[in-house]
Length: 449
Image (tube, rainbow, N blue to C red; front, side, top):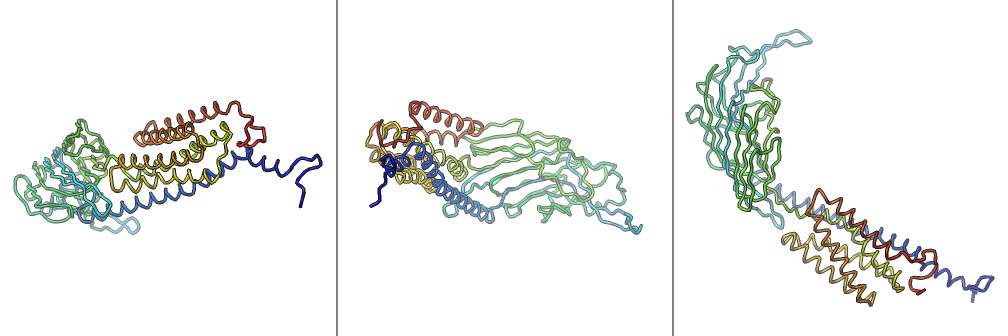
């Protein structure tokens, strides 16, 4: 049998084990366990992204049947013409076909939007039916920016209405030009921005003043965009949807949002878009300069769960810190396996939150998952510490952390400040509780001084 004593008669094996169980080594070991806990947290984060991807695929499938995000632009007057241009390399003269696009002077758009939810398996998406009425007043100028009047083919002139997804059209679309009902044909008549409908602009020529009225219902999902094409545009939308998002190029000048729905009004000038009344050169319509209302749920289950998982390592860190402080202050030892089991229980909270939130409201899922995990961790902590005081402290820590996380998930501007404040308070508490600990002492946390 080998002797583990040194030349002075000290038990070197016992001192080595005492060193391994010392405060500093145990701190390093806990840090290593924290790194290990990043593995299940990372896997849960990947699972959240996968489920979010499936939800997006389900939304796309719903859109294929119902209609995708809609953009409405126009009406505009489209007049084909021919122009003679010289080829730079050869000097040869060629005749090219072009289109002149005249935008309205005054555009008034009124609409109501009915929003509902459509499900595909576990996933759902908000869809809408918008009923719109548009009135556009045109004044055809005498001068067309260098285009010869004789080159304009007024007999082929049409009034085009841009609709990004024609599949969403419901019922009949009615369009009148100067009070006369006209036949509606597919496509806008434009070389670019072709998606939509058009009607012949009969009787329109240089110097004419006329009005175009269009009424239709269109289905879509997520957002409705309307391009204010007029020199002045007045757009009014209303809906029973209580949580609209106002985006796009322009903000409403007046809006009312309540639990009963919203009403919003936009007034815009075409000068703000940097374009004139005439679009030449076959350029596409600048429909990206649109006002926009989205109808997304204010609570996105997957984005909130993903944000919560990012705080998972902080959860585990602070919980491990409380348990380690228990070791240091009380002198009782906690095995590394017990740390890992508690860390896995905390990780399970996020998976439970994700799975429950797919079947119930996010807040309810958060409460249920929190109660289950706090109950599990608290019960196990008592079996480890055998101390009602420390078990209560761990329970209080878990409850406070979960409450803090829920608050952070519902704030945007102050999330970083809240997280920094929590870390400061936790560090200050750890410094206070360990102010009298002799960290140089190679004694086991289980050996009372």
